[in-house]
Image 1 (cartoon, one colour):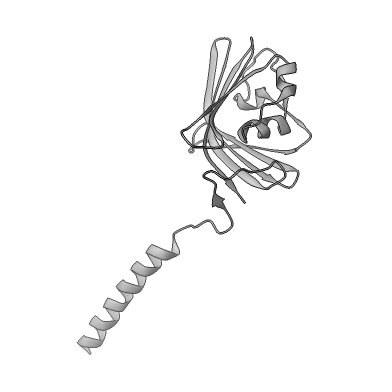
Image 2: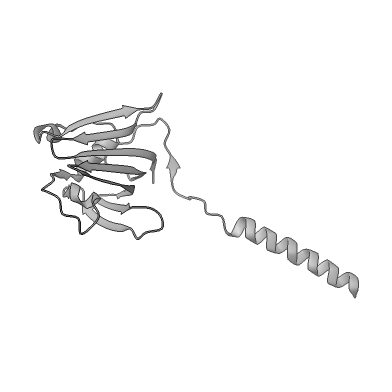
Length: 171
């Protein structure tokens, strides 16, 4: 009887460790990280990164997550991972205001609106003619062999928005 209890106790501990190791892990099923293959604007993809918005004398920092599925864009903005996030859903033809990156309740002078399509094209490494028409300067910085920019800077006389791209993958 003592041997049976020891055997069951060993098996229970082993079973518990296996469940703890493999049952609590999260693996992405459908996504694959892109290293150098180009992505078109029609494909579904996700982007994660950090942002820094400077305007006049205020600065805002945080993180963003963009998910593109067909013509729907989901944008999640957060200050840090402990505070609540703000979620926005756009159509690809809509415009996003730069004020979305600023914490609610902060008053700022008018900031420009940017087409969601133009913003996505910047993430994929395409220059936007529409942004240059609106006097918004864009600078894209690339890492060594990457097809996609790792840093996107947008600025004019009222603001400077820096977007650091950590991951970009197809869904």
